[in-house]
Structures are given as C-alpha cells and as structure tokens.
Amino acid sequence: PSASLRLDPAHAVAPVNPRTFGSFVEHMGRCVYTGIYEPGHPTADADGFRGDVLELTRELGVTLVRYPGGNFVSGYRWEDGTGPRESRPVRRDLAWHSLETNEVGIDEFARWARKAGLEVMYALNLGTRGVQEALDAHEYLNQPSGTALSDLRRANGSEEPHGVRIFCLGNEMDGPWQTGHKTAHEYGRLAAETARALRSADPGIELVACGSSGSGMPTFGAWESTVLELAYDQVDYISAHAYYEELDGDLGSFLASSRDMDHFVDSVVATADSVGARLKSTKKINVSFDEWNVWYLSRFENDPKPETWDVAPRVIEDHYNLADAVVVGSLLISLLRHSDRVTVACQAQLVNVIAPIMTEPGGRAWRQTIFHPFALTSRLARGTVLHVGVDAPTYDTAKFGAVPTVDAVATHDEATGELVVFAVNRSLDEATALTVPLAAFADLELAETWTVAGDDPYVRNTADEPDRVAPRPLEGASVDGSSLTAALPPCSWSALRLV
Ligand code: AHR
Image (tube, rainbow, N blue to C red; front, side):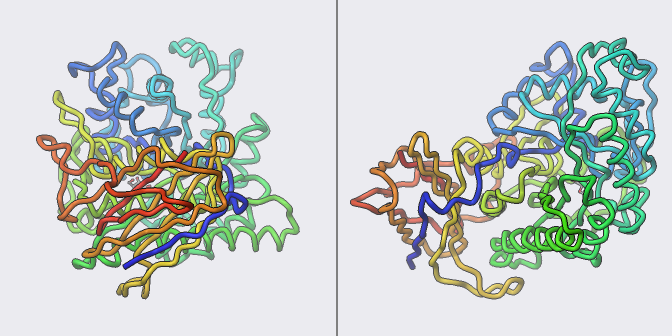
C-alpha cells in the first residue's frame, strides 16, 4: 500500500509551542521517592536528587512539569512539605492509599525543576481546600518578601520567589473518585472565585480550570460548558485528560487512539468557543492537555486494593511495548496538529508511574519504549506546525470505524528552511510507501531519519535489556527531484528531518 501527504509552508497551524512537551510529577507511588529523589543513590547530588534521572529528563526534552498531583493534590496540604524536614508530618494519601512523608515539598521540587531546566506548573488543592489556601500557596511561592508566608519561604532557604506562572485550579474535579468531587456548578463557582482572588494578587498568572477526565465521562461537554459559563473571564485554559490502552486484544483500535484525542480536543474547543459566543467574548480559552499517555487502567482497576499504608509503593508501573510507543508517537502528532488551541500538554507521568523513565531503588535508570517518540519529537519539532492532508488506505476498527493507516504532521522552520515530517503506520502487517511532494519548499535534502519499529508489537524494554526498542535510522528514505519517499514499517512511528 501507499500513502501521500499534502503540505505547504503557506498553510500553517501555529508556532510549535515548547509547552507541548510537558510532563507530570505526582506524589504517587515511586515518582518522587526513589524516582526523582533518592538520597543515598550512587548518582544522588547533595540535595538527594538522582543524577541519572535528571540526565534522562533532560534527554527526554521535557520543558514544563505539572506538580504535585493528580488525585494526590485534592487532599494535600502544601505547607506540610515546608520547613525543617524532621518536623514535617507524615500523612495518609487517600488517593493512592499510601503514606506521604513530605520529605519533598515545593522548595525541594522547585530546586529540582531548576536543575532540570523546567518550568513548574503548580496544581492547587480545590478538593478539600478553597480560596484562602490557594492564596496562601501562591503567597509562599510567588510573593518576593515582606509578608508572613514569603518570609517563611525565605527562612526555609528559598530566598527568591519560585515565580510560578501557571496554576491548575484543582484536579479532575468531575471525577467521582476525586477527594472533594464537585458538580460542574459547584466547581465552576469555586474555580471562578479562586481565580479572581489569585489574579488580584498576581494579575499575570495563567490559570487552568478542570475540564473532563476523559471523553467518555458522562458529563463530558456539559461539564466544560457549565464550568466555562461560570469562569470564562477568570481562566485561560480548560484541561483535558486522556489515557489509552489496548483492550480485549484489539490492537487495531488501540493504534487508532489518537482519533479519540482529535475528537476530544475538537469537542472541547467547540464547546469553549460556543460559551465565548454566548458571552459575547472575544477571548479564546485554550486547552491544557495536562494528563495524557498509555495507561493499562483496567489492570489497575482489577488489582486488589492495598490493605497496608506504605511509603512509595509500586503503583501503576506499566511496562510499555512497541505498540505503546507507536500510540504515544501518534498522540504527539495529534497534540502538534492542534497547536493553535492546545498550548500546554503534559505526559503523565515522568518517572516510574506510567512513565517513560524507570528506576530501580539503588540501581539503574532506563528508558521505556515510549521515551523515544517523545524525545525525538521534542528535539526535532521546530518553527511552525503545518496543516497536513493525508491520503492513505483505511482499515476497519471496532472502536472508530474506518481509520487511515497513516497519520502525520509536519513542522517547518522558516529561518533555517528545515522541514520535519512525523508519521505513524498503523498497519500491523504491511509497510506503507509514503510520498511527500516537496514542490512548495526550497531545495531540501534528508538530514536524519528515525523509526521506532520491530517485528513484534509486544516487545518491551526491561531494566536488563533497556534497548530492545530504540530508534534506528529509517533505511531507504530518499529525496529525489521534488518528493520525499520512504517505506514506513508496519506498526511504526517515524521522523524525517530535511534541510
Ligand atoms: O496519573 C495518574 C492519575 O490519573 C492522576 O493522579 C489523576 O489525575 C488521573 O486520574
């Protein structure tokens, strides 16, 4: 089979937004403890941060990190994680039935983020807390000095304010599993009033209201509409969360998961714009896709729930295969394609918990299969995202009907002339001959090509064999005359850079 792409530098979506390559660190399982932080580890620095994880975080190309939750945040008291370590309380974390020692709090995390070169996106607890506690957290984080909480931060060793620019107003407040779960009306009012108060303290901050925890939520659409009717003028973003997994051996539908992400974003944008129209507002609300990934959620839901309260237990440590990497690559294609309205995105999570980076306590850190499409997309996507038309054969899926075997997006850097094409081949058994006419571009030559592919969609990386799935050059790609041609292997994700 063959497929072709239609693209033109004149047909741009939006600039590539660095915040598309965000990640997420929750106080959950081993993401923080024995993930980013493990004093005593051979690579740990003076602050107790694992050097091997810091290095892999940089290699992954993460730009922003959402913190400290997730479901965890809806019962979290931020002040527990401040001040002398020996007097920090140990608390129950109801979300994950574990114990939180509070050894790491916002001062430590901000230090880690600086070392990793990341912007912090800070999530506030609107589950068990409200306007006052949100203001207090903001004062501790961002007020320079001369107030009770800013001076407390300085006394705790963080002389400079942490300068957080973007805050989440709670987490997944539409979900009945959330501590302090609310109706859309209850949440919309709280989000609006919290936002109004935060903005009087700091007008320049960006605020994210909770949207839906998945497109399958019974309140999907109605939730966004009600929340935005109540908080439109006060917030900048509405969030979206989505996790995908292969169910019942239906690999074909799983490989087409980005169809759901496309539908999710298009529906939320349409809903937000319709609220804007009703309010006669010229302002646009963008989407913060601040949790997305492959997660074998059904396995977690079927697992027996813990009976003990443990510190940093192994929770949802999914081990990813090649097909998962192809899906992650295609989700990144979907996010880039929506760069005009999805201006923040966070893969959930960064380390150990459904993560591209895995660690063993006291041992090595290694790259899961899903590490590779993220790292390559973050490194290669530059300049402007282009509209890409895809002409490809379709295949039938139980979940999405007929789906094109190939999906693709491209970025173009006007300054250097560089063009990068990202493409997936969802066909399980056939390579697809891809043609990309380049007449609209100045003379281009192939600079580098990568593919994440293999004979077995279920092959995984492990701590002992961490490179079973790794990118390799896409053999046989070429530019002749005014077209790029390449054979996309079955069940693969590829990137081709031309200069
Ligand atoms: O990332 C794991 C969990 O998924 C988060 O805590 C929650 O927000 C979502 O349901």
